[in-house]
Image (tube, rainbow, N blue to C red; front, top):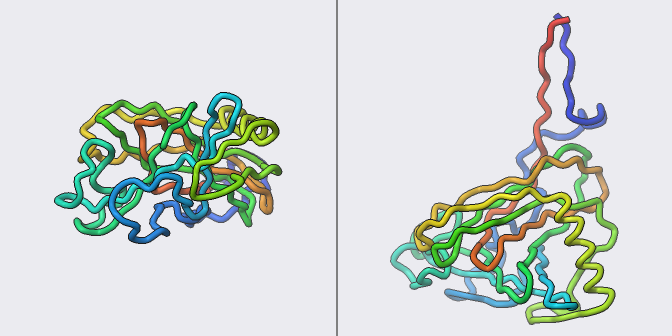
Length: 238
């Protein structure tokens, strides 16, 4: 019997680490700490960007950072779950991100630059608002050389012209790479957060990529991550 390594890509991927380390920062959206119960529109979420299109303009900073505190705490009605995807003990400040929609559905994304080449996969937990069904998508975009950023943070901002065209180009890259999914219509307040994953994607060390998701006005996101995919050795008989 001889052992052959069956790979999904080139032999260079053998050097990739098999690791559960998250390549994203603030994937659980908890870096803000306690900022008070409820909605925080245009909040600058550490590590993340968000935008949508309003006509011919890119609308920046569309993410709404939501703080909840679990069962028995503040009443967020059907605007979102009473706990985040980690379901921390009641009374604990917890956070997730809602789409404060203007125009098209928001895309939320984070750039990352891997230090090792290999296959990666992204994932995130999603929930709904208003007891609604939520179509969604998520993907890994790149390599990227034109990193987009808003002209200002912590407030609404709109740009036409080149910035809008650059964002549309990013959206086109995203649409080509994204995996589509959905979450069913269930009771929002006690929603059992559902994890969805991207397609596996090869990355090259030192190049920049983006993890991105789009989930519309009726969705929320939490616990985003990008991790390396394990490469398995398979025994075959010759």
